[in-house]
Image 1 (cartoon, rainbow over the protein chains, first blue to last red):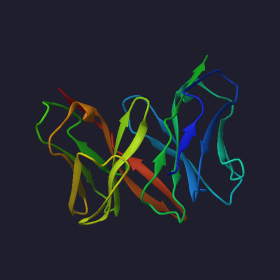
Image 2: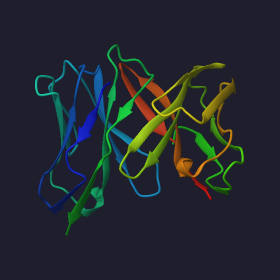
Image 3: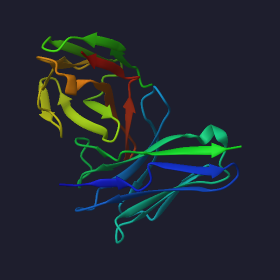
Length: 114
Length: 114
């Protein structure tokens, strides 16, 4: 079965630096990969989606890359701010892009220190 | 929040009692999901629905049943609650935005089984 791993449970960085979070998967290449932000006591909030035929996608200070050879996605937050502190989740959609079984990683808790 | 409401938000129940959690959406979306989130496991799919009376099992469906008699409501039932079902439960809907798909989550229900 498909497995998804977010390498770090926690990441601490200084304000202004770039945060880089990693998501690795095994087995089949997903149709697309998503990144979500989750704050304590709240549900995840969608941030970005990248498809298997896309190498990179950007949105404001966020950048996502997708390397199907390495079976890895990297999520970057540039010029990080304390307000970026949260848990970030990656999620995979099965081949074909079905809206069915979206598989989530366990998340990486990012702390940005002033 | 894409018009998703979960009820109740918090519940404490005794082992062996039945419990039903409700997810209500106001925007007529076809796909609805129930996830549970536990420390060390992340978000795991329990069941999902792709239409009225159309449901399918997720990764951790044992001990849970669901029903969807109306588009707007997706109910999750624990027939006989156990302590291992203490968790935070999230309902989600899936929305196609152009060629992309996003999941929108409710605020969560914290269930404690004592």
